[in-house]
Length: 339
Image (tube, rainbow, N blue to C red; front, side):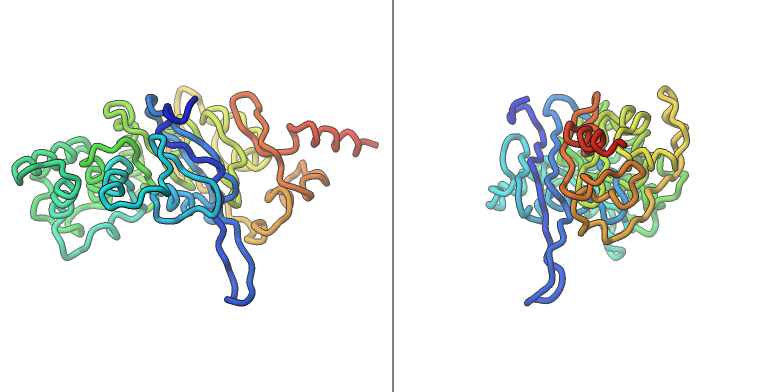
């Protein structure tokens, strides 16, 4: 696939942070050589799944141009986003790439009516030429998420439920008619009974509006339920990536296999069986500084080579797996270790 055929193309992105004093300290690699892409003509829901500290939120900041990568680049519609400098160019970029954040009540001031934000969005992105047009645009966006302008007019955020205000957040993102929505933990702050209501919105947007969604979560249940493809992150790396059914039903990486043990057996035709809250477990912070595979300290299949250098990316069926188990070098090391 050529660059021009990709909506989003993340190429070998690395992000390092300096930790410690000004004259000392060290560097923590929060995102390490991450690559993936979304096709331009095939709307999909692509999930980045990982526990706290896996690097997924740092990566989302890079994608939104809130953070510059230490290495690598991000292309949107074929253009390196780091070259976006002019205000007009940035507005055009944000018109096409809209975020939906974790806590909707932090998005809206409790002292300002909800519709004011929606009208501002319509006007700032020049989606309407007058107040009447803006009202139509806002109402259309709200109706796409099961609300209407009449339902939210004159109301403050605290006068809406958690599910309603998160749907308003999605509606606000839709006003500019984006091509990509970046949803960072969009259901973690709402009641369990409302999670499926929110994630079903993303499926509807993909199917009816042709909008791609980059879904960032620690919840494997909703990830399995709505995703087309999924990437599992561990300590800055993508350790496994592919179609969601392959990755979560037939995991190849030992880390993904460990995660599967904590969830119910998925039924391919009944994704709703996963519709309960399942989190990835906490792990040791020291894994970030480990040489070689970050999972080596807990992996039941660890080999000496796993502690020597970063594993290669290997294609296993439909999945990309970062693991020595499937590499020629790893197979040779395993054979040599046999008595």
